[in-house]
Length: 145
Image 1 (tube, rainbow, N blue to C red):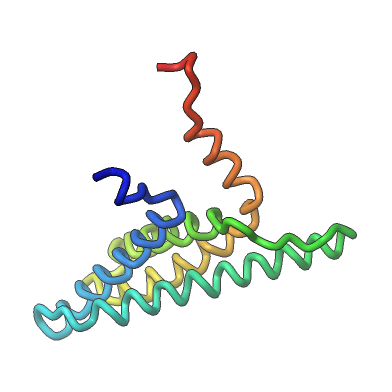
Image 2: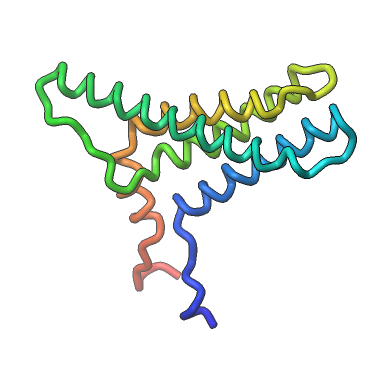
């Protein structure tokens, strides 16, 4: 059965985690305002994913500007692991920060969007180093158990 269901890599896990954080933030915020509701999950997911995408775009744009300013070739992200990991961690931290900062826990989606934007922008800057590090972490050698 393992042959038919491939294992998810770090980017795919972060993508699913980003959607889960945005969806849960939407459900919780909608339930605070309107009573228990599930129809606010999709807008939370979509807005959080959009915030992460715009953050990743901003991070890559700034990285390319700094590289061009120093006389280097622009970096074109191939694997995009850095901004996806940053977007997930940022959305999670942003939602937690909004829970801690708000008296009634409102505006969780805003916290997850802002966190996803900042996390993805910061994660795009070291993006070229993240994928080789993840590759080395998952290498299997015969000398280690």
